[in-house]
Amino acid sequence: MQEILIVGNWKMNPQNSLQVENLLQDIKNEMKNFSFEQKEVVICPPFIYLSNVQHLLSNDVKLGAQNCFWEEKGAFTGEISPLQLKNLNVKYVIIGHSERRQYLGETDEMIAKKLKAVLEARLSPILCIGETKEEREAEKTAEILKHQLENNLKEAISYKIQTNKLIIAYEPVWAIGTGDFCEANEALSNLLFIKKQLLKLFPKNLAEKIKILYGGSVDSKIAKDYINVGFDGLLVGGASLRAGEFVKILKTIDTD
Ligand code: PGA
Image 1 (cartoon, helix red, strand yellow):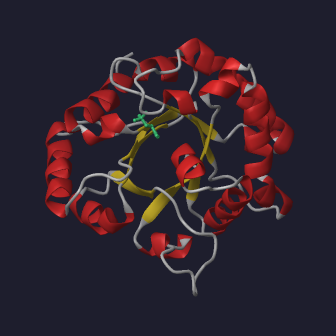
Image 2 (cartoon, rainbow, N blue to C red):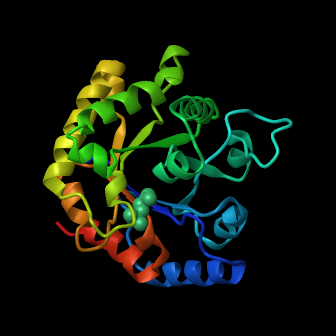
């Protein structure tokens, strides 16, 4: 059985270090006696709390970032490079989250450059793709997923960057933060479509190793459904800020 990957995306929360410490302490308490067997747990806090999280969590929980820049160093005010993240012990970097596409104007081209830079730094990019409500209603989901995969992965493919650390997160935009999650059956048909596209972009042995996560209003009641239909893990937003609920998600994955 493949290792299941559960990633908590804290987004722009919490508001100060004390709240971070309390949340981490609560997660640690809830996780007592928790078995990490066959599971990789990752927390992606805002950049400013990466060190706090690193110091307060045991080595069992891995560190992720929510974004990064594509250059290694230099005059890029306000940006953070993959190398700087690596030096903080970060292992995963979320790339192309829909909130960054929507509010920060991230284009497919920018995302392609970031993805390549993260892979070059030997970190794992978690590339977020997914359709909006309007695109879904217009039955354009497959077209959108195909476009995002081809365009966001194009730099990595054309420069023949080793992609064995690549992770894809299928996050329907309409399901993010709305409570209106994508039913497992619908998610499954998009999972199968993504797998088919990956087989067109990469050699079979590589394509089959790419983990695909589901994200969008995941909580402990529905978490297991996505693993049951074949997703390799989950990207959890809101619920990752509630220690009890987050750890409950991890535990539900365990029960067969
Ligand atoms: P949500 O966020 O779980 O709050 O819907 C998921 C995400 O944005 O990654």
